[in-house]
Image (cartoon, one colour):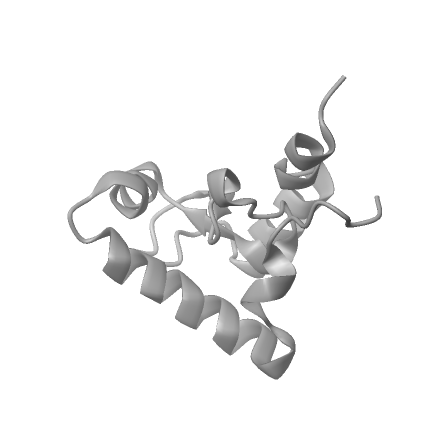
Length: 103
């Protein structure tokens, strides 16, 4: 049985599909074919597996965002993309697992 945090940070199939549609199956950084599995707020930091926290990245950009020397720039691009898409209702605090979340 999965812990609540693990379950909350997993990306459900319906979220992957919705993000793929939103991003047109393309990496939001370089425009190449991508996979909708990149957390803006990392799973290790409690980032939820919800549309507002997930983006499509190609394998190269996903690696660079996670481990590259310019990862902060990549993270900023993800933030700007999500903010531009969701507008004022997008809030980083709503993307983080809270121990007392119901669900």
